[in-house]
Amino acid sequence: MSIGAAPHTPSPPIRVLLAEDQVLVRDSFKVLIDATPGMTVVGEAGTGAEAVFLAQRHRPDIVLMDVRMPDMDGIEATRRICADPVGAGTRVLILTTFDQDDYVYASLQAGASGFLIKSATASELLTAIRIVSSGEALLAPTVTRRLIAEFRHGPRPAPVVRDLNDITQREREVLTLIGRGMSNSEIAEHLHLTVGTVKTHIGRLLAKLHARDRAQLVIAAYEGGLVTNSDGHR
Image (cartoon, rainbow, N blue to C red):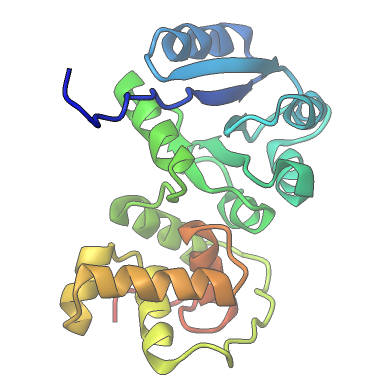
């Protein structure tokens, strides 16, 4: 035994609450997650109201939330869960179908940290849970660009005007590129910065704009007028 070696303490498992009204789908998620090392299901909800109750009771790390829920839809349930200061560490991962659901913008406004396509593979589901539980948003460039495409089509609620006066010019540039769907490495290359510097700017943006994660920064870019519904990659 080496002298001074610190004993390895395993990380606590990621605690997941399932909010899905279809029992067979919910059961399949439970079997997969409980069989995965480092993850455990702490509750199962069949309605939106039940999801809110169980989130308050169990304080999970992740709520896997279907949008189309009986009693209370997933957006309202997400809003209530994310607004509860007791569950400040809980993040919501929305289950959606981009070609059908018209809830993307509202879900982000409600506080969702990311989106998972219902046709995702088991591996993609587990990866999504790990990404969101680590504090990142599940908004990889391809996903973000698809979100932006959703924002650009069809009628959307007029965005509120967000005050960006407290951010620097460089932070404004970074926020604009986040809103356009660029990854940290793409932003770094575009602005001739290091990835570490980009992460520093993002951290400051999160603090200044009181944003939970990168998903909320996408909303801030739209609400601040840095990216509009008619924008592509300029």
